[in-house]
Length: 241
Image 1: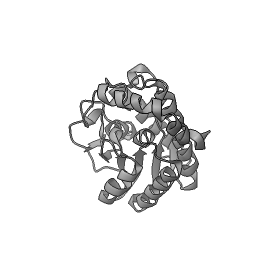
Image 2: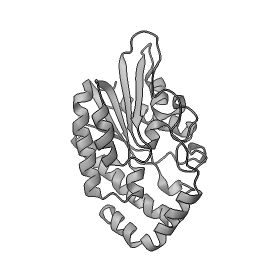
Image 3: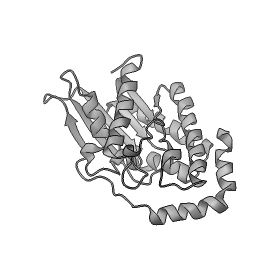
């Protein structure tokens, strides 16, 4: 079914495209969260761990009122334990697909990090990115990120959110989008171990309070639950952090 998700979406376009137009017209357009896109969580002494989050709108806090409630800052606070400080940064752009992140965000990266989280996929679902282009883009990003990892560092490929539970998407567009999201997520799960990355599914984050006012992006509660899933996966990984 995964290879059929995009053809199915294309075949459904006479119904789905008008629904997509309606969603764009009626869904509130939330801005990228204001506030500093970098900081330090935890102890005041020099940071022992560097965290970077890159990707689409969720990487830069769309859905919350300040970057401090976004994914990067919340994950940094969870990782700052036992007297350890965590320096965090968020780099991305609302609307980016995998190709945009590879072309615009990745070339801006500097330095080395202990954890790099890649949060992408929803725009590729809505834009019907093919599985071939998706896989090639993710593999290219992984290759470009390697020089930015410290020894023992981790790349996290975040799974796609549970689109079939997004109230802002009407049926059947919601189910068509969810099927394509499942296919892209399955690709991440396949690529990650082959390239030494960690895939973290987040399809369980489906409570109403996980979503912001637009019914599409995470709320502060949603970002917290997302950060908890990533922190737990890092803790249970063979080498830990």
